[in-house]
Amino acid sequence: MAPQPTVTDGSCVVPEWYPSGWRLVRAGRGPGSSGASTDRPSAKLALMTEAAATTARSSNLPDKPRIFSGIQPTGRPHLGNDLGAIRNYVALSEKYEAIYCIVDYHALTHVHNPEVLRRQTLEMAAALIALGLDPDKCSLFVQSDRPEVTELCWLFNTVTPVGWLQRTPTYKEKRANQPEDVNHGLLTYPVLQAADIVLYKASLVPIGRDQAPHLELSREIVRAFNARYGETFPEPQAVYTEAPVVLGTDGVKKMSKSIGNTIEILAEPDVIRKQVMSMVTDTQRILRSDPGRPEVCNVCQMHRHFGADYREIWEGERTARTGCVDTKKLLAERIIAHYAPARETYRALMADPLRLRRILDEGAERIRPIAQATMTEVRERMGLR
Ligand code: TYM
Image (cartoon, rainbow, N blue to C red):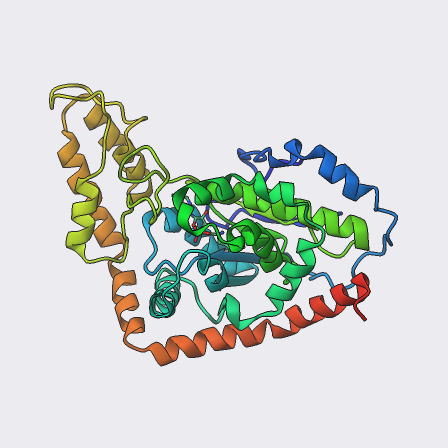
């Protein structure tokens, strides 16, 4: 498999056409594949034997690379969302046709309170705009406002062996996290995610590394569909930031709201101070006079993203000139300052929910023709008309 592209700021991204669609190509380290495809050879083979289907290439492919990504309506995003994905949403929408979706259908697999879902959907929309997404330069919409995706999800279910879904690591995790609510949506979750992306024939997907297994599955589903019904969809490629995995305040697990180890970037300054001060640093540095190890200290690593002087900060830790508390205080103040303008914009947007709703409605309307064209093509290819 070709190495997956890594993107830091969108400025040095070069799109190239490959037989499977558009890819971003860029000098630098590629994070490589998730490896998820290699453990499913037999299922893949079974589907490939049906490749007798037409080889006609879809005439409905975009002539420029199209970007798509989705984010759950968890309310205000955390630092992991921003460093791992949202920064790339913004950078890529400056250069390419970009579509971003707040995935409320996906959220229903674990949020069952209608009021909470409605509020958190608007909060996420406000946060994305506050963090730099310009609704005039991209289409920002709510997943359930373009319900064609649920039809495509069903159609994809018919080319997706159930074993692929049962083996998905996130399914196993979610089953463990909510044993009292193992609903069918949890199993189908990645199929809906594949439908999200390819309904718009998007080929590039800015995501954090935790989503790599889902993206790999999307690629498998696309291959299975194309093998059975003819070349219809490009295989989507992941686009990563320089921080594809942001660890939580515990310094061990990935930052995640469900774990409760987040730094809420748009929260009040005192909340951020408290969260940053609770961060676990180098666990081997017991005394203030012990030398620190910045390469394993999560606080030091986060400083990379909030100032060009991070090497000096690391040196202070290494020589014990500074203590962990100093380094954390500095990080908290830098995070607070960095997100201060976004915090203001977020507040203003939340005070005007009608404006937010209008932006989201316009986003969903703008992409309607793409969704409808794809569904017409898919129905025809599958024999539904
Ligand atoms: P979600 O809502 O969990 O996360 C949104 C984005 O933030 C990234 N992210 C992180 N990156 C680095 N470090 C972290 N600690 C961290 N936490 C979150 C995620 O990788 C993601 O890019 N299943 C998806 C939503 C989705 C989607 C899609 C994504 C639905 N359809 C289609 C892409 C394309 C999810 O739950 O993301």
